[in-house]
Image (cartoon, rainbow over all chains, first blue to last red; front, side):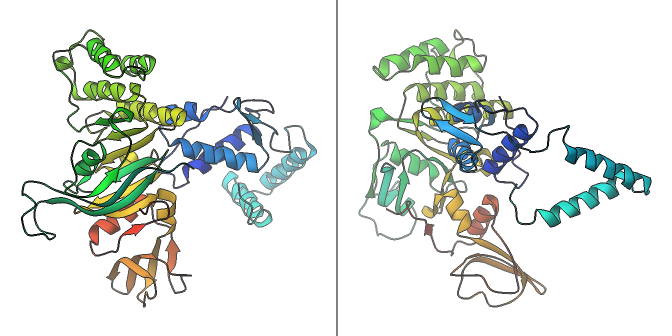
Amino acid sequence: MVEYRIDRRSGVATYLQIVQQTKQALRLGLLEPGDKLPTAREVVEATAINPNTVLKAYRELEREGLVEARRGLGTFVRKSLGGAPADSPLRGELTDWARRARAAGLERDDVAALFTSVLDEHFKGDTT
Amino acid sequence: MTGPVIEAEGLGKRYGRGRGQAQGQGRGWALRDCSFQLPAGRVCALVGPNGAGKSTLLALAAGLLRPTEGAIRGPGRDRLAYVAQDKPLYPQLTVDETLRMGAELNPGRWDAATARRIVTDGGLDPTTRVRALSGGQRTRVALALALAKRPELLLLDEPMADLDPLARHQLMGALMADAAEHGTSVVMSSHILTELEGACDHLLLVDGGRIRLGGPIDDLLAAHTLLTGPVADLAPHTVVESRTTGRQLTALIRAQGRVDGPWETAEPTLEELLLAHLRSPQAPTLLTEGATA
């Protein structure tokens, strides 16, 4: 089960915060296929946001094929997210790269900036 | 989608004087020429400055006041709940007795479990007399009475005014949970926008006795654009507000077609939208689709 944290001052639409936090939970393995998302009632009771906002977020997750609504039962996770688990070859390559970057004298912030700029270049136009 | 839960047509309310007086936009009119619809199942923020006519509109919708002109239609007395600003309760009754009275006055509809939960969530001792409760605790009891009636339409006049932040969050959560579960339509007034933002999906802005904006909040925001940049002609757009500082222009417009110009554009926040309208009484009324009567 996930618990949503709504930040009203973030400037990010509330339904998107729910979408993003659900995806983050999927990436981190906190939610797995078959798990049930909290009901709209549970979410709004805890967060005091509008029920339609939760439904909108769940519809968006459903549209992306990540969850499915089962009538009268609730909304369930269909797929996990993140094709790169902790022991994948991609992670190994990235580890090597980080080591080389450090050996070349880059600081943590330099590496983060470099990584972000490459991400931005390759995932341009994608939504979260 | 079901039909509207409230429908107002040419609604006006004048206090004090008789109908024989000269007509006109003069003194005495708390509300004038209000026409709008509220679709069922919405949580509507009724906002506007003090004295704008919010309480009058709620009392008209509750059937407690008669319109001076025009009409307002909504659910009957037994299918709506209205919580007035001063939360009228019997001071000599205990919390428990108050809830029992609610049960007796609403046979067949009373949801005792909901009433009990809202009261106990606030840590209220059921044997306390209403007279001895704080303002916030009284609000809790009044909301318990209103929600346990299982209304189709819940009208709340400044419901959160005397609650501390925690109680406000809890009660708003309880309200939203009720709306999620039963599809209750809610209208709540406030002059403090932050109380309502996030919880409401629909807006009515009342100002000077008139409805100035009405519709789903997302639609109203999308209908407006905030411009900043060099001073230039804003035609053909409808200008709600524009200000110039030196060479810079800041304007809130309703775009007619594409916004082509040397400006930076952004969608306004709800607060920016409301403040711009309150500063510009001459801006035309906007009721988006579904909100027009």
